[in-house]
Image (cartoon, rainbow over the protein chains, first blue to last red):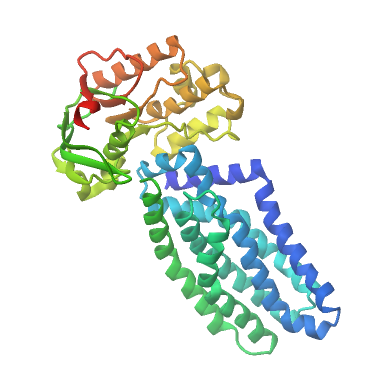
Length: 221
Length: 209
């Protein structure tokens, strides 16, 4: 457990020292969503209709931005070898890195989401559900993203390839994330959608680190 | 010094192929507690590959490894937690301070080593508060070697540990290895510089290719 926390603490420290990466993700999220009222026009009814979809799609893309460096720095400076030789199973190491990644990106996206819901004139009914859905959905993005990051860690320019690998896997999160908010806005129950998101999280929590760890082991060959 | 028990590391007829080219085959190695092995051979003869193979990063194309009499593949995780590998990369995080780097390695191993004592033993105690990006290549190398001192591991695999080090530091590395072996530790070193390793077996990989 101490080793787990040591990894999380180190990754948070590195993220804060570097600063740029986490800030980039949030700024990208906010700027891109703000473009939509300019592009579509200020008509509240239309904006409100597309709000959940826009917020979620941009959140997926924003999360994507930061994935490339998830394992790359550790791979390039030899830290990955140290992590593999630690007493922790590599799967747990990946979990720790995903947690740190979520704290520095997903959590910030969750915090920025209500602001953007206002920008997009989203119906007030949907706010709480949007937050709940993002709290459940964004950790899945970090976890699934870790598979893509691990598979492309040895490549010089892995960024585009990660998108191709990972975006299709994000689709279920998008569907149920948007579905939950839509349901709440139309006065239906969002519970089934949130349960599905919770299910995705429970499923990816053991499976994604397992797959990512296997890919990382291959990258050391 | 920690005393390590067990019968050590053995390789049975291992072979290694990289990029379709056979580097060595039918290699038998046995290292007992307190033992040392020096790998030599020209560039490209497979020293690094052999060390990575012994570290479990590479799978042998043929043959197998045993650790304390048990096949390594049975529980690679347990085996890998018994060894320390220092390769060409120092695993130093440039934006962390020297002390923070050591603290992380100790935390990762669940060891409560005193960072200052560890740094002092490598002669870089005065740099403790400095961000690691300001270290010279040799100082960074010594910081990388601090990984060996934070947690006692029975098996050390060192790939050119003396690169960029000055003569005094090389002597320090030799002393570090000697102390490790007194406690029953084992070490496999690939080095171009002649290291003073009393009683070390020498493996010339050129003879095998």
